[in-house]
Picture 1 (cartoon, chains in turn brown, yellow):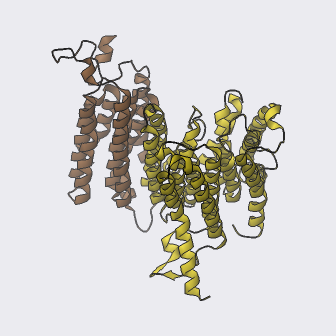
Picture 2 (cartoon, helix red, strand yellow):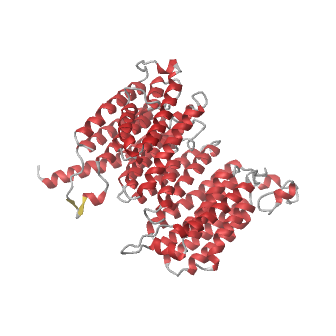
Picture 3 (tube, each protein chain N blue to C red):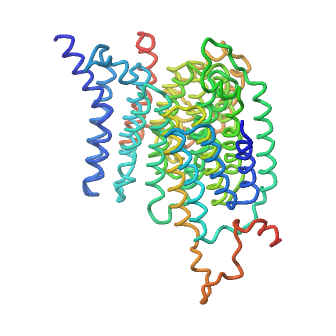
Amino acid sequence: MTLITVFVPLLAWATVMWGIGFLPLLGITNAISILLGGLNPLRESMAVLAVCFAVIPAIFLRCYQLETHYERSRLSVTFLALLLMVLLVLTRVQMDVKMGVQISTQIKAIREGVFFPGMCTLIIGLVAVVGYRGMVWQWLGLQISVQGALFMAVVVQKNVFVSIIGFVGVVVLLQGILCIHRILPRMSSLMDGHGERNRDYDSVFHIGGERDKQ
Amino acid sequence: MSASVQIQITTFLGALVLAWPFIGALLVAVVAVERSRTWALWVSVLGCFLTCMGFIFPVSNGLTMGNTVATLWQNDPIQRMGRVLLSFGLLLIVLENPPLINRGIRSLPHVSTALSGVACVAQNPVIGIGILIVELAWGIGVFTWPAGQAYIGWKLMKTSFVGVFLILCGLMLPKESFITGLTIACGLVVLAGLAPFGNSDGEKKQLFLLLPLATATMLLAMRLRSFEGEVFSLTLVVAGIQSIWLTSCVGWKRGGHLLRTLPLALGFIAVGVQSDVAALLFLSGWCFAGSGSLEQGWSIRALSCFPPNAPFVGCLLLLSTLPDWSWSMAALTVVGLLFVVVQWASDQKSMMLTWPKDPAGKLASFLLVGMGFLLPSAMMLGVF
């Protein structure tokens, strides 16, 4: 397990805690950790997908006024995500690995510990989806889960999973874009005559912005 | 008739059963609004006939175009019966609803029935899950597209994709470990929309998607059970019992929408204890119970497992096998179910045993009673 692989769940956790500003970073780190495992067409395409799924939402959301209400559950969601992450890493030790005749790719991956960053990232994303009430935060959670699932699919090295997860990523991305476009107001409606942002502007791009507001 | 001709005819019939709802969806979407309901009715009646024929004359096992049929699609009687239930569920949806203007929503029950049918027969259950995701994506897209519907579509997507991710995560883990069984079972339960994960706004049109989706999810759960171990079964049973208790605790005045998923909860318990015929009986309750609104007495009676409907027979069958599996689970199920039944029986109006006046109600009541007799008889004759 490379050092950069450890950063994937940590960045996912930071995204859940602070906002979408960390998502592109998570995608790029994920792509690097996928590529570091070896270069082949499957890994390269997965790395491209990981970057696309992380960067496109961040660019897209720049055009919209995001939900500004304070997420009351933010602290509990963050701690729950952290707790689950620790639990999963501990479970790795307890996992019943069968000493069969032929050891599968998954069991090898678990022994080497490369499987769990992906799983931790996926679970952190799901905690965000379930715990947060704001739509953008929930979309963010789904995007984090896609990143984790991509990582797992690359480790398992089965084409069927790779294609399914690629499709799921595209659906989550497009559906999120459609819903946000329909529900959230455009940023242009908040601009004053000189093309500058109104003072009301506050978003999850601005790290700690909502906390400062309080 | 020579063996090869017989193989070719049955294979063609089997393929037609799978392809027909797609053709039907196209026809229903293309025709004008005024004629769409008549077309949808004919298409679904023909679909029911084809699935019944497909059940009676299964694909003969032999060589077709160099492949054995067994390698083409899953062909066991339980899955074939599941497709029969799906097609009759589609017919009831068409009968119950007036003609719809939106082409996408109008053809959605046909598309989702078709994709659910294909998902059930895929040789690899992982591909089956993939097809269910396609179905989900299509359904959510159709719901979200019209103006003002985005939030409803988003709520549906959020819950279902949590289930999808859990299932995918579990399938990628090594088989027969504790986490694998737990994750896949939780994912299936969330994807099927078991209480409290189902739609809480009681949006009637969401059943166009959820009815076939949950049916296919349960049929896939039966196939995944064979190689996911003990924890998988236990999680399904526990999830089913908690859903029953939740339905009974919330009460009938506030929990009307929870009662709609009661047959699913019982069905998952049946899948957990390997009583597939009981699961099919509960699935008939899920597929034929209509929208489950309080005005439909027949629907409420079917959902709360009143005799002589199929879910009641399913309960008898389930309770004959559940004590062998675990006494405590059996006791919890019976007590929870009794609470539900007592609560709904107190509503005298819906419990009066009257023959429904609408055609959908008449057909559904006939099917519910018919399946209650037919499935156990077929089991005794050794079909399943």
